[in-house]
Amino acid sequence: MENLVQLCRRHHRLVHEGGFGCERAADGNLVFRDQRGKELARSFRPKSILAGQEAIDWMKTQIPNRKIDAETCVPLTTAGERMDMNLAVGHLFN
Image (cartoon, rainbow, N blue to C red; front, side, top):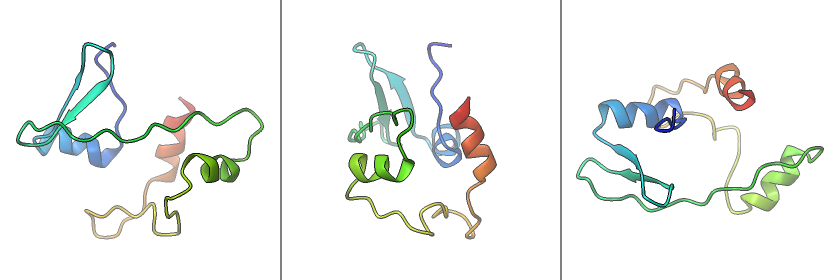
Protein backbone atom coordinates (compact mmCIF):
# COMPACT_ATOMS: atom_id res chain seq x y z
CA MET A 1 0.00 0.00 0.00
CA GLU A 2 2.96 2.34 0.47
CA ASN A 3 3.57 2.60 -3.26
CA LEU A 4 0.02 3.66 -4.18
CA VAL A 5 -0.94 7.16 -5.29
CA GLN A 6 -4.40 8.36 -6.28
CA LEU A 7 -4.52 9.94 -9.73
CA CYS A 8 -7.33 11.32 -11.82
CA ARG A 9 -8.30 9.29 -14.89
CA ARG A 10 -6.24 11.44 -17.27
CA HIS A 11 -3.04 11.26 -15.25
CA HIS A 12 -3.54 7.55 -14.51
CA ARG A 13 -3.67 6.95 -18.26
CA LEU A 14 -0.51 9.02 -18.79
CA VAL A 15 1.39 6.92 -16.24
CA HIS A 16 0.21 3.55 -17.59
CA GLU A 17 -0.06 4.25 -21.31
CA GLY A 18 1.66 7.57 -21.99
CA GLY A 19 5.16 6.82 -20.75
CA PHE A 20 5.04 9.11 -17.70
CA GLY A 21 6.47 7.87 -14.41
CA CYS A 22 5.83 8.34 -10.72
CA GLU A 23 8.14 7.37 -7.86
CA ARG A 24 8.61 8.20 -4.20
CA ALA A 25 11.85 10.04 -3.40
CA ALA A 26 13.98 9.33 -0.31
CA ASP A 27 12.35 12.29 1.46
CA GLY A 28 8.89 10.74 0.93
CA ASN A 29 7.72 13.21 -1.73
CA LEU A 30 6.40 12.00 -5.06
CA VAL A 31 8.44 12.66 -8.18
CA PHE A 32 6.74 12.64 -11.57
CA ARG A 33 8.72 12.23 -14.80
CA ASP A 34 7.80 12.80 -18.43
CA GLN A 35 8.30 10.31 -21.28
CA ARG A 36 11.99 11.20 -21.48
CA GLY A 37 12.55 10.66 -17.75
CA LYS A 38 12.83 14.39 -17.02
CA GLU A 39 11.47 15.38 -13.60
CA LEU A 40 8.35 17.51 -13.84
CA ALA A 41 8.14 20.74 -11.84
CA ARG A 42 6.31 20.48 -8.55
CA SER A 43 2.91 22.02 -8.19
CA PHE A 44 1.56 23.60 -5.04
CA ARG A 45 -0.35 21.44 -2.58
CA PRO A 46 -3.33 23.25 -1.05
CA LYS A 47 -4.18 22.83 2.62
CA SER A 48 -7.19 20.73 3.55
CA ILE A 49 -10.55 22.37 3.90
CA LEU A 50 -11.48 22.99 7.55
CA ALA A 51 -14.59 21.52 9.13
CA GLY A 52 -17.45 23.97 8.66
CA GLN A 53 -15.57 26.02 6.07
CA GLU A 54 -17.42 26.75 2.83
CA ALA A 55 -15.75 25.26 -0.23
CA ILE A 56 -15.91 28.55 -2.16
CA ASP A 57 -14.12 30.40 0.65
CA TRP A 58 -11.45 27.70 0.78
CA MET A 59 -10.95 27.93 -2.98
CA LYS A 60 -10.57 31.70 -2.86
CA THR A 61 -7.82 31.49 -0.21
CA GLN A 62 -5.98 28.40 -1.45
CA ILE A 63 -6.15 28.87 -5.21
CA PRO A 64 -6.77 32.58 -5.74
CA ASN A 65 -5.25 32.83 -9.24
CA ARG A 66 -6.95 29.81 -10.74
CA LYS A 67 -9.74 30.36 -13.25
CA ILE A 68 -12.59 28.06 -12.26
CA ASP A 69 -15.71 28.16 -14.39
CA ALA A 70 -18.20 25.87 -16.12
CA GLU A 71 -15.47 24.53 -18.42
CA THR A 72 -13.03 23.60 -15.63
CA CYS A 73 -14.22 19.99 -15.47
CA VAL A 74 -14.23 19.42 -19.23
CA PRO A 75 -11.28 17.18 -20.15
CA LEU A 76 -8.98 18.66 -22.78
CA THR A 77 -8.06 15.31 -24.34
CA THR A 78 -11.52 13.94 -25.08
CA ALA A 79 -14.44 14.84 -27.28
CA GLY A 80 -15.82 17.21 -24.66
CA GLU A 81 -17.19 14.63 -22.27
CA ARG A 82 -17.75 16.03 -18.81
CA MET A 83 -16.07 14.79 -15.69
CA ASP A 84 -17.83 11.93 -13.89
CA MET A 85 -18.85 13.94 -10.82
CA ASN A 86 -20.12 10.90 -8.89
CA LEU A 87 -16.80 9.13 -9.39
CA ALA A 88 -14.76 12.18 -8.39
CA VAL A 89 -16.78 13.01 -5.28
CA GLY A 90 -16.90 9.34 -4.28
CA HIS A 91 -13.11 9.19 -4.31
CA LEU A 92 -12.84 12.37 -2.28
CA PHE A 93 -15.00 10.88 0.47
CA ASN A 94 -13.02 7.63 0.54
